[in-house]
Structures are given as structure tokens and as C-alpha cells.
Image (cartoon, rainbow, N blue to C red; front, top):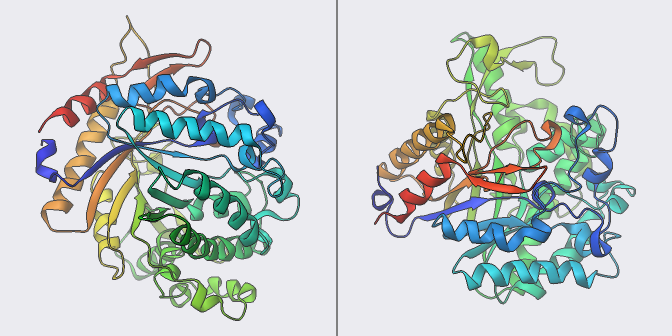
Length: 445
């Protein structure tokens, strides 16, 4: 497998996120995000870890972008921290916060790296959460103000835009299960949050289209290949319901197909939050869709799980040969299966894999990190992407998650995904063997 087999137009990159890397949590006028608050709550993050410093990208951005260049990576995906731009969520912008992203974009361009910018990667201003956050329909106007300001400032240089990162995760984990910020639970929070997030994708997509000439506009979705635990009818039907929730809930409305209520009746509750005109406002003609896949899920029927009546069978219980630090099964065909699934949708001009990677324990020995498990994971998954490409499926790029080890949400610093190891005590960066391999792979013609 060599780079040339993917074609000269195939995009290669690496992805990151503001809250997980920047640190400088209250520097130069930045407001608090829901994650700044959530990480301060007892028992929410492993070992009570936080991201107040994280990778210190805010101060080390030149060094880290230089690493992107040194690894021969042509595209760098990063996100803007909403509370760094608008400390109160709306109102008066913080010029120093915006100046930071101007410098990041300019430095990327100076080094010949194309910036791909995500507007919302989960760090909602706490001031807006105090007003209901994603459960409040006014968030459509709040985000429009924020996105309009950012696109007007950066749209002359940034042409690749993503609206949301993984709405299924930030609404499900944050507004239903309560294991992510802001820590809310129940369908009364999940349904409005999910509907408003879906509306936001189209509304902000239209805004970017009007503000940025020549923009390539996308949004990203988490996805997992769903396999029934058995061939029995109950498990097969449970897998269909799980697929509707995990993979179809957000992509189908923006394609004009509506919510997948027929296959998951519990989703009918979302209709309570739909207003006149919403059905027409949901679809948007994105230029690309980003899919983010790490594993598969095996699903069994369960009478005791409310609404879904299905449960995920953990990888450890299935005694699979490969499990990551996140407890996820290493199953490379999953990425092929998801590319195939999303390729079957009409109305998606291009698919990019905007995140794929693996967390494994790492150790620096004599200045080297021998992360063979991660290296094999990336190679095996790229082999499946190439399989999809050879079959003519609609995949046009691949971004590794992630550049540097970072703050991995509720896992804290216990799940390193980076191509580059970070010693968080000293901020020393060490390129791992997987990073050296990726650099070598991308240098080939």
C-alpha cells in the first residue's frame, strides 16, 4: 500500500480540537466553556484531571504546526473555541481570542498547510448553557452570531469549514447520559438538543455559503458499524434500532429524509420540538460529509433498556483479540462498512474520513515511542479505506485522530491517541513510530 494508490486528488490530514489541546483556559479574556465547568465537578473525569494546560497549543501552536509540516501532512483540521471568541457566548467579541486563530491560520498557510476549521467541537460557552444551551432554540441565533463573526474574519483564507463535530456524541453523552458536559440527562434534554443541533447544521451551512466565497462546507458524524449479536430476529431488530440512533439520526434529516422514526419509534418524541418550517429548514446541500469511525458495535436485544430495547455487548465480554485503551474492539472492516453505508446515500458529493485512530498506552524509551499497535491499526484501517476506494465508493480523504496526545474528555489523559507523544509535565513532544510511518507514507509518490 502506497499513497499513490489512493489517487492524486485524495486528501490527507490530521485532526485536533481546541478544548483538548489549547490549554490557556482563562487567558486573554477567554470565557469558561461547559467543559471548563464540567471538569471541575467531582467524579466526572478520571483522576480529577482537567484541560487547563493540556498540550498548551495556545502557546505552542507554532511548534505543533511545524510538526504537521515535518510529518508531511498537507491538511490540518482544528476547531475554534467559541468562548475564546465570545466569552459571554454572544455580544462583544474578544479581539485577542480571534487574533490567536488568525495567527494559527496564517502560520498554517506560511508552511504550506491547508487549514480545515471546525466551528463547534463541544466547548459551548457556559454563559449560554446557563440559558439552556442546546436545549434552547435560541442557540440557532447564538451560533449564527458566532459563526458569522468567525467566517467574516477568516473566510478570505480558510475555505474548508465544518459546522458541528459528532452531534450524536455531544447530545447523547452530554444531554441524555450526563457523562459529558454539560452533564444533563433524560429525553427531555436530549430531544430538543438533538433537534436544534440538526437545525444548526443547515442554518450555519447556509450562513457560511453566503459569507465565504468558494467555501467547501461540511459537518462531521460519529459512526460505528452495527452487528447483531446473533442471527436471531430479536437481535437483528435491536441492531436496526441501534443503527437508527447511532448512525442515522443526524445524517438523514440533513439529506431531506427526515428522522428515522419508523425504525426507532422512541424518536417520535423529537416531533414535539419541531416548528412550522423546520422540515424544510433541516436539509442542506453540504459539499462534503465527514465520517468518524473507530470501531464496530455488537448489539443484543434487551427488554430492560428503556426506549431502545437494545444493549451494546462490550468488547471485553466478547473476548476479542484486540482492544484499545478506550475499551473498543480493533475491527478494521468497520471503516469500510461505514464508508459503504454513507456512500449509499444520494446527495453526498464527497465523503472524508475526518477522524480515525486508536488509543494505546505509550512509553518513551531512549527518546523513542514504539507504538506498534497504533501503527498496525492505522495501516489496517487505511487498507480498508483503499478497499473502498478501489470499489469506487465515495471516499476522498483520510484524517488521523490526532496530532498530539491530548485531553480525551472523561478519560482525561489515560487514552493517548496522538502521532506525537506529549509529556504533560514538561510539554516535551516526541514523534512516535506511527508518526514517522505516516510521514514516510505521505512522502511517497
